[in-house]
Length: 429
Ligand SMILES: [Mg+2]
Image 1 (cartoon, protein in one colour):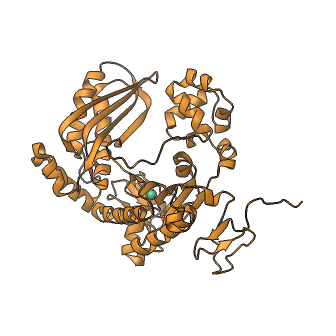
Image 2: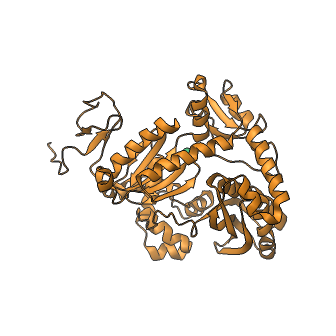
Image 3: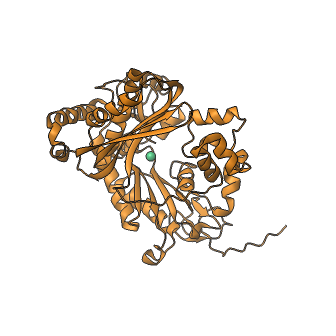
């Protein structure tokens, strides 16, 4: 059967030499590369998510080329956890947040390198600068990933957003020495899903016409914000696949799952209205965790809160921002969200101050209620360069600031778990 294609003959390009391809060839007629990108909507989509591949490990391999074909794990000591595993180590089964002894059982020849956050921050900043050369609409999610909105840039660059992104990835490789994966779609939710589809060195496109059918085949865990607890909640009602949510009415979902129901309704249909936002003042950095069983004990909640405060602090330091407002989030066993916040005279990016400010808020709420989730964050963000600014910004706690920075340096040198105040681990893909 012959199927007419209504799109033009050059709906794709070679990711290595950028020459146009029609979609019939297996290799590029120009350079012979098999890395061809072809999609009917390729040149109409403009929302991208870029995520560096095994970022910490990739930066280490860049600096030590003799490790290029060896399994490399970035993380802290034999008693610590895996922060990032390179793709060779991942083939052996090593994963982020896995205890190091377990990782080394799976990959005994792996080279373990303690994290060097200063080096990763520098590489991350360079990637960010290159992104900003193609569009001012860059919304960083972490040190090595960001959303980009390339709408309206075709005239400026003389090429479609897709092609601009392919050039950008090449430039990141040439200038920073690491690889990254791209997800290109029509909104943030789908772009982020897409970037994860064919890592490393991926470039995945999700067009409007395939949105519903693509999502239908995926488990509900693919939906942004649907963690383990929500998956279990949905499974109780027999819902495991997004296809099932696509058949449900909005009212029904909202009746059963509250405000989360509205999100399930829209995201299961691939609808996401969030814009790529560069407004740091409206932005926040937060970390949260959902419990396997509800927690009501205040001391237990405090213990869980600390590593989250550390995580927020780490991200703030990596992004070079500090927050004026500390936000505590709790979700009760019956899915009611409580958000409490407190504003500080001076913005902070220190885990200690973030934690200490949230503590009284927590103590006021934790009076016997069973909670299923706790989160902490900072908002009202301002710029702060990680080293000296911390001390000047945090005038009220400069001794503490110095202590925390000293701890950071020890961790940079020996790994994140070298100095601990409760459990803490991080991951990076
Ligand atoms: Mg990454």
